[in-house]
Image (cartoon, rainbow, N blue to C red):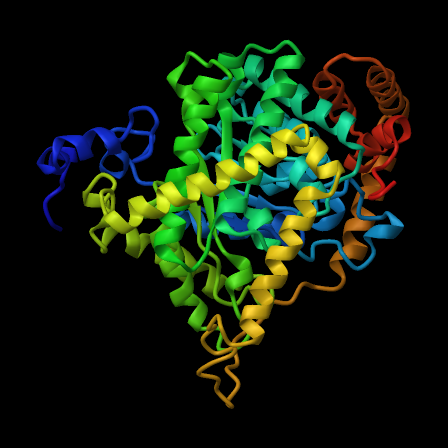
Length: 516
């Protein structure tokens, strides 16, 4: 283990250059949001996991925690993401496939069985029904005897990018934004350690956006959420410190590190200069990173271990607060226990063997890195100006601007691969005739049937009248303007299912139809 370096090396730089770069932990946070960064605390190693039933995913969570993971990240299946119970006709064939199936409070209890929620922070990738999954999580914490004030974690709750990059929306934009700001308001008063949104560039990048577009579309969406909360009457410096972000890390190490630096600097200036935030915590862009799923190849899948390691390096050079490293087999299926462990070990080797954590902002001052940071900031700023001219992110999405830009970038990228201008090792160069066989995880096809039976039994064993009354109160509140979080909590206390709660809001608000 070598010597730890504080930012003393900074003093050796020429004075004018020092002034331009700034210090870590100081506005505009180009070099990091904390003065000593990883010298004081490593990033959270938060592997994304979820499949099949709550019991199966709980076993994977506990396995990863035993192996040194420091935070949890929940992947939900498509029916859960769309607010459908596992016995819904549209859920057939999808239950437990790409994440864990959660429809009831009992499911959430089993998901976090023997996991102390006062000691582990949890991230949940859920958007349209984000309020509902957070409500169930808080009820489980309550049953564990954990005060909501001691519960920490993040809910994605980023509905705008669903309309352009991911597609798991339910309701039209206006009521969806109401749900987002309801979560802001409720959590700021009752769950102060909870990050109420994870504004996501990740899915935008995975859909085909460039690094500059990822910054621009993410920050434009973030500005829309801030404006919506302010219009609701929320106090800026009360909710803004709990805003968090989520970015991808792709293969170009220096461009990716520069992207994170540029985004951090831009957000600080937006919050301080544009919105007038006074609390320095409101200026900080704190973010989670996931290595790029779209960069993984089914051909020569073991090469993905190397890709993921370099992407993780870029995230750490860029100052991430938490990190998920993809498993090498994710182009083929969900991670096996072995591949998930290799992905975690990748982070641990980076943290404990590479030496990168012994310096604050280890690559800061590199002429190439700083040039890329400024270049990406200029490009992203120009795109944000275009979006503002169109009336802001919601209007730009409604007009199809964001979707068109992403589609064109994705097409250019794919064309470069097909023409050989962009090399993908094992795909369009250095191709092997021999196929590499790796174990692929298979989901039990019976899980859908079992889950349907479980949710039907859950409904049969409850006080049906109490459930109907709670859902009726939620329906009435949805027609008004009250914060819906307390009504959702009460519905789950009375053993309503996720599909029933989401269904009540479908009745009142309808479903979003693209192009409609």
